[in-house]
Length: 64
Image (spheres, rainbow, N blue to C red):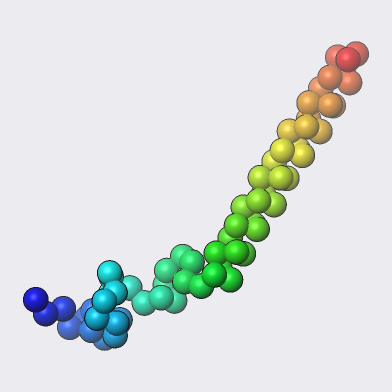
């Protein structure tokens, strides 16, 4: 079965699963994947810190 003409232009690897170029994929390199994981971790850590601070403020206001 022959690949569509567009796929041949976009991806020259005959064993590729899709015709999407690597530059358009989310984690095309390990560096990109690491950066995404770091950002996700820091966002989650910030959410946890804000939640803890909010609880402390609320408990202090209630005389806790």
